[in-house]
Length: 187
Image 1 (cartoon, one colour):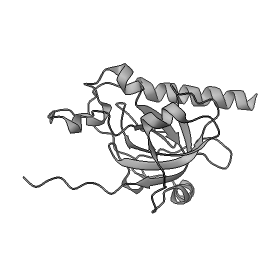
Image 2 (cartoon, helix red, strand yellow; image 1 turned 180 degrees about the vertical axis):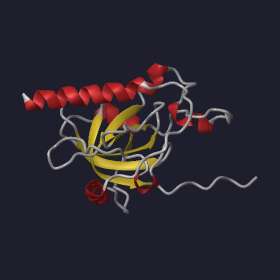
Image 3 (tube, one colour; image 1 turned 60 degrees about the vertical axis):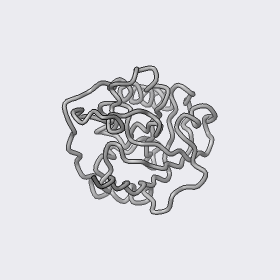
């Protein structure tokens, strides 16, 4: 029964995260995690990039529940790619045409890819989550942890969650590496 509730909760969390895919009114201010949670994040946030990472699109094609996998992507693909009450985020394929890659300087939420058709966005994203010792997502958001924010490029290693499908891929992250920001070209 508990396993069924966990699957329902994960499915519900995923569905909520994926619903927010249109332009929005601005960036939310992340809150710092509590002290106990910080130590868990410190164990997962690594300084060495996991090897043999594949794109989000490739992971969706080949990953099965229980597989160990490493995936590269950017925090994007929804108006609110971070969940506030759980350690989870939407990871989009780097090829997803977010507004920062276009000439649309006016978009207040460039990570949501609002100019891309929803089925395309849905086919290019997945959910990553950090689980606690109890097997549930940690009850703190990832936004702001070590400066993590929308459009950051991550390499995530972990296990494909039970119940995941190509359409709803969830990875239980055991390692998250933040790629260094790319310097903007000088004008």
